[in-house]
Length: 405
Image: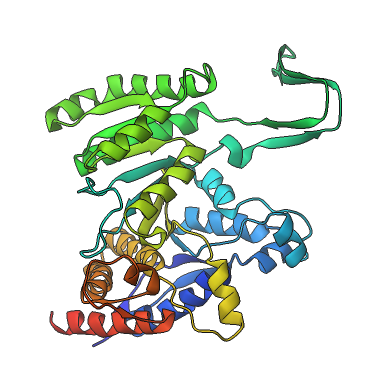
């Protein structure tokens, strides 16, 4: 069969460690044999970010604004150990945080449901979508190590010179302090993205903060959501028979565990980071969760919700065989290709993306899977495959599906 033609490139952001190895495998086995793949490539591996003073991350985000659709490999956010390991110039910030701040929008994360991989929470029957605010909070925070006694203040200086001051703490000893911020426009975009997504999916929307403790910061989020719901979405929700529900974050966690699923859970940035990993793992595996950043400006960035699989990468470097689950990374590519096909009106590209996902799921449901899934599957006698053999097995199934059309 002829390769599927693309008219507009995807922005391709390469990454780090084991996911970088999987990235190439996926392209070589599952994409390049079937698609005349057009991408604008950016190397977001930590070494290249360091060499470019992280300018490559900004360039990749700007390219996403130009082309509209991006696909991103998992990347390292360096800590002190990584700084020494990679001989970094400085402890560069999270590339995801940088990209999300430049693109704005909301990250929607949905678990990949596969027969034979049962949720650890037995009453979960339907997927739970985590909608994560993609701007600000701890990811854009300024931090300071307090050396000893003294007063630390929040100070706002208006353009007209007026000042607002709030004492953070009178330190009697050393400590640490952190200053976070958010923007009204970004919170409004977050709210509208969540309400619009709920309408499109015909699902209830939950939102949770800790406004009883954070009476200004978190309460502002709550107020913005309520105002936009009342003015713009209440009638739509009532027509569809779906519900907007606000509660405290700790109450939301308890309710989520007791629920059957089938709704969207909107979370602030840090909450969404943590809870999406919890939801993914509780549905079976962290490697089985899709992630897409949806910007109100019409930009889409697809990625896996997990990290770079460092432990497997070190085994790979030693020449040892790994069995790394590539599902979320495959679904990042399929999601980006489907959106590119939708925007460019290329039905063949959209169909290919659908078939790639179907083939990936069918491979697991036929009992052929990576070790993480084999350890938890209810399917009898699963076949445990290496990282590369799993992708090659998906290719066999994909070819069958494409030839059957």
